[in-house]
Length: 296
Image (cartoon, rainbow, N blue to C red; front, side, top):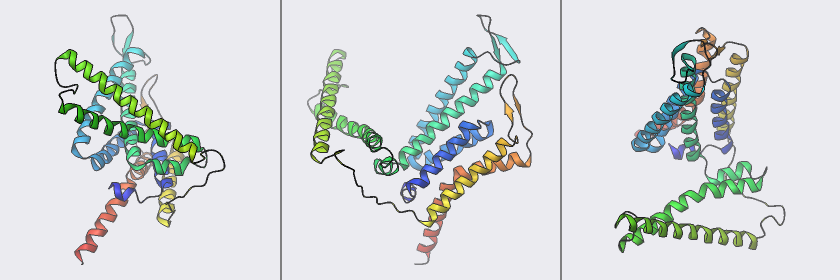
């Protein structure tokens, strides 16, 4: 699925992720938050497999539990008092519901950013932001590539030191701390040397000395235009329902939601379709490819 999404133009994926996050951040509807969380977990399972999926499920549960516990303790708004805390402040039902909604929002946002990290590599970021701000694009590109390089270098250092029993998992507690400090020193020293080499290489190639030119391997096809227009149309439809009062609800002072009408159902279906559109396209291409292979 990652290979199929890599065929999309960067503008298509940018329109997708901006539209998905804009709806939940602006509207903050509980149903849409649940839809966003559920579909984002489907993407994580499709991208990372069972291990990554279970890890993100655990992280989502921990994050949700933390936010749900903290919000009622610091926010005492609402008129439905469940009970009073030892300090005399009330714990309200509305604060609990808002904490649950905030937990779902944070969890789904983290999941979507994981999807972004899979779909966007440094080349796509430079393409999107290089013309607007070359320095920002370079900084984002170097930052995204910095963590994987550190992980690979850490694995190499640990493999070399484990041969002579100098890994931070070997020896007595004092020796482990000393070994961990040596590994960290080697890791940071290598990162600093690499940054100096990168800076010298960029200076020798005349970076920022004149207006830069760049080569782009991306081409905007008709399917990308259709994809972007579909995303923007769904977003416009959802925002129309929201600003027309069809999705009117509030958490404070009392939780009240709009009646489930055809307009609400249409907005929820549009949002689910917008979140699932890349999945639908990838499934369509997979079915088409299997059908072609069966005819060979």
